[in-house]
Length: 550
Image (cartoon, rainbow, N blue to C red):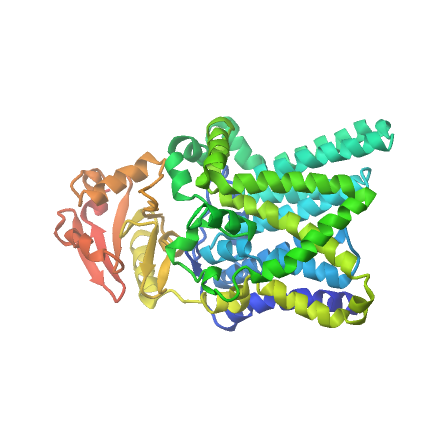
């Protein structure tokens, strides 16, 4: 047990290097795409995130939600390290190399950009993807070990559950590996095992389907909000808004090569790694010779030669698709997939394909390190070299350390938010709804100090109607809910519809947060069906007059 703890200690140290600062004080962590609060709202059962929030809600009865959020992110980093470890384990038993491979999986621009934007589901899906990839490689080296394939299928299912886009990444990976496995069986004249392997693969697919049954059921029955969103609202304009970034075509290619190019980098919501001009990209170029070394030596190893070809194919396809519409030739491919492959239009951010590139880089890096580890000079100085390489890898995304280099710190909700919440609960017993304005999905809050996803529904105990209009890249909103659009019409027309006269949505209170363009909503003071209740430091509260008549 003691030895096991000592083996895990470096991994715990890496995670604590990121999250340690968050546990020193209470409060929630706010990111552009991620806002938690004390009120856990369960999505519909057919939502892919239903299971996750159901678990969080149950745990919230035992652990405060702000602590749960920190533990969740800590767990996300742990999953990524495990996924990186599982990939490395197929190529080396050297503990130092296993550690270096795991750290590479965590400290890279892809993870940093998505983390700092608050896309925790994406990087968690990425971590499970790495684990699935690792188990698939293990199965390739020993095709009859069904345990490896089944465990890989579990992680593949979890990857898709947390980030449905990964169905394409896993689809490419599994397609290539199925071909490799069958070619290997033919070359080794073990054709009698083809049926058995085929059965294992089918069972693996069944596992993936069962894990994702709830939202797949929603698609089959036509009740899926995600399916409606993709079919009804995503257009070519989304591809343009979320295209892979770079100042010119050459820089787009280089960004993808360096595991970057995330569209959110241009919104100034966090500090981009590119701002560290004296370091940007240099760490990866320092590691690149080791990656190339792994590629070369894999061709010399008969057992890995065919695998190497498969990895090159996976890398090439992922690289091309990650460029998206940023280049004319790749734009044609992307648009064809967008228009013809079911649900591919849901992958409106092609840069997510970079997740696949990171996995290939890690495999080749581990192989290169394995070759290098046999040299005498390395054996004699392995501790020093391990420290230097760890430092170089961390320098790929140095701003991840210590809570995003202090960019993200725990923040408590203001006292007056709790006061208003208590008042509304006492008055209505949450048998009605709250309308929260200003009407924006993303907005700046003075007490947070940055632009974040509207946290109102995650805070107030009563159901909240709030804007889900992202207002980015020429796109105002993507709501598929006719009720929400009706409320939006009332808000944008300064109350000149009969929304409150009919009040079919059972709105009892309107909360105006004194943030962003809140003064544009002061027409509420003169609305005939709205009554001013109180004003606090951060909020103005109104009551719907005819609510009492309902």
